[in-house]
Image (cartoon, rainbow over the protein chains, first blue to last red):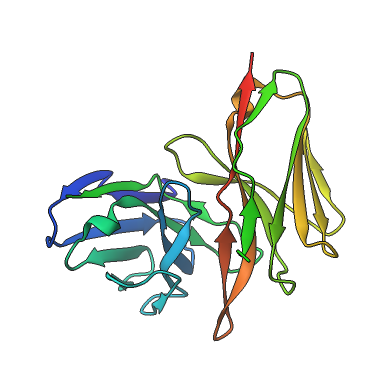
Length: 113
Length: 113
């Protein structure tokens, strides 16, 4: 089992460029999440999905879009990148909510110039 | 008041010593509590869940105090490999029947030889 994988691992963008981050999990989990982690701040939830074809907003959704066309994949899109989106992005998945462990991917380090 | 508050430290601990730290949470309705461990530039990983009766896993002990709304983590006989950031995690309501996990900023532990 690969667990949760993320591509790419690193990326540098210029302001205004777009990109898509891919998250894949092979644990048949229903729930998937996208977080961002910034220095001095805890992990903040961007968007999440409770199943294939469903998505919902988290704490900091502005500037991001997501899609969950297949159960195993959760895509995070930046339509027009801004320097404020420079961060480390983590994807996670879990079997359920609340009492279930979230498994994290290795992260994507994004720099927007 | 922030949802989850932690003293970031760092907590410099001599090898073999005991270290303990607390985390406070603001939502009295929270039902799930966890400690995650995050190594430098790595993804968070579940260390242990925190139950009402408290729980112990080897050298690690977690306690929950609902009346005062805090959870604690104690590490005995610290090893160099315990150096990491320990994230306090509490479930929080998103609405529409969904929940999310709220992450603290973490307690940084540095075990010194």
